[in-house]
Length: 353
Ligand code: UD1
Image (cartoon, rainbow, N blue to C red; front, top):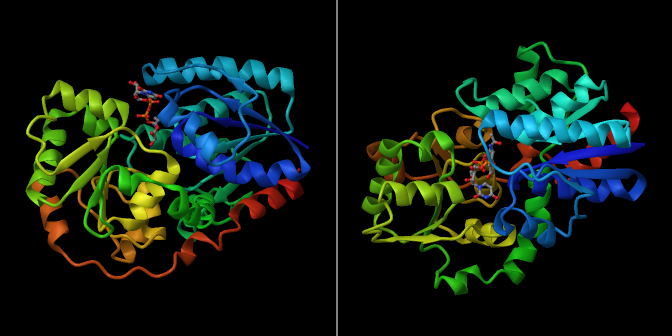
């Protein structure tokens, strides 16, 4: 069995590294990196730290509008698939590269398998929602990370080929949490004391491209007053500079994007997380750190139902209100599987072939 895997952006690399390791014990994997993310801090460092195989193809699509990025990736992926003739195309998550992979493979009638299937924000204003709905629609195997994700697919009458595999990001946290504890120097580098700081990340285009929303978030962070460490996505940094929001930064420490191990260590030792990232909400939950999510829609209801994560959007007062509340202590993340999701995915692929 020959699998072509398509990845393109930071969160894909973590998930793919976990599955790839198991997959390559028995099967041939061709790794196609679209090049959607290309900065060292957003790309190569993840392959190095997760000891992942380097891509066989880097298609170097880079940045652009959604149409430009997706179209370039589509054209270049198609060429590789025609040459390689894989039995399956394996896709991850909901980024533009995932959509391009889904389109290229389905039009060539190569079966698609989707890891992290069935997530829904139920709001098509998010580009990720369009990417995940389309990818699920054309997939023959759908690896849902939770029971809720299976139910979301059922509502859309997608029931064939659906498996609750557990979440490969949970596998990754279980495997690399201890490695991070041992190897990460992030606390020393930034003079941080465990339990005495907050980690913030914001990267959604809908927020970073909106001066009002971004200002409202920064205002909340300043009024919180506690030490906040804020790794910056490149677009967020550009927007903060453009709107002059990096001056008078008070308690906020803006830093470069951090590696996977450094982020795990930060999340594990922080008193709280404030984020608009789907992945970080989950990592906070896995590592038992309370979280405030600056989004309106709930993609991970498992974390909000457990009252470990509060969904508040971007208004200053709402963030401050969530900040002042108490958070229940977090139990083990059993809704996300048992840390063996990658093994399950590979054995289902094997049978599906
Ligand atoms: C993408 C995903 C998002 C995911 C995020 C993780 C889509 C629609 N969105 O968003 O779901 O949470 O990745 O980070 O695919 N840039 C650089 N260097 C890079 C990559 C990007 O400077 O290596 C800058 C460019 O200015 C670019 C902007 O970031 O225009 C946005 O990058 P892009 O790949 O379009 O999407 P993300 O916002 O990172």
